[in-house]
Structures are given as structure tokens and as C-alpha cells.
Image 1: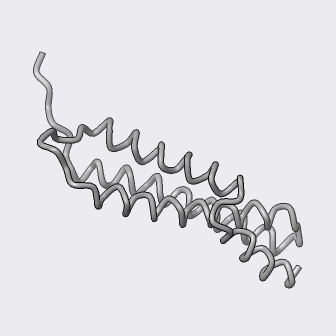
Image 2: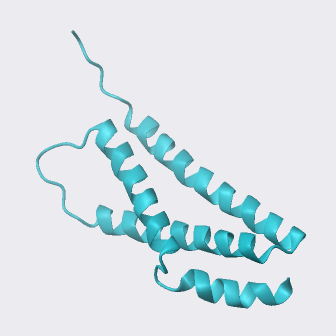
Length: 111
């Protein structure tokens, strides 16, 4: 069976779409929380923002690791991206780096 390599641009596009979906989810949650004056929803939106921020940090950290001689597969890159997203979400839910709390404290004044 002959296999064909996946286009590197396609890989990057899929990973960007995953990141863009997370950003859109945050934007929707945040706008809804402010519009409906829902403190609990605002708290979740702040956690989503912190999750996105932590995910960006993790991606930058991962990209700073020197590559070995083995080329990364398409599946591995997608897996690592999804893994980083889930770890970021769990970190933000459990207190993370404190960004969500600071953001919530500042924005809850407007509800």
C-alpha cells in the first residue's frame, strides 16, 4: 500500500482551526456573560481565556525543544496540540497561574 505525505500547510491549518475555535468559544462566552450579567458564566469565560493563554505558552515551550532526527507525523502534531489544549483547560480550572481570577475580579465590577 502506498502512502502519501500530508501537506505541512494542511497540518498547520488544522492546528490553527483548533486554536481559532477555542478563541471563538471564549469570545462568545465572554460577550454572553456581559450581556446577561451572569457572574458564573463570566468566571468560565475568564478560565477559558486563561486556558488559551496557557496553551500559547505551552506551544511556545514545545517549539523551543530541539527536534531529534525523527520527523514528527501529522497525527503526533494534532495529538500534541489537542493534549496541550486539554492540559491548559484543566490548569485554568484548577487555579492555573491566577490570570482568570485577576481578570474576573476586574470584569465582575461591570456586571
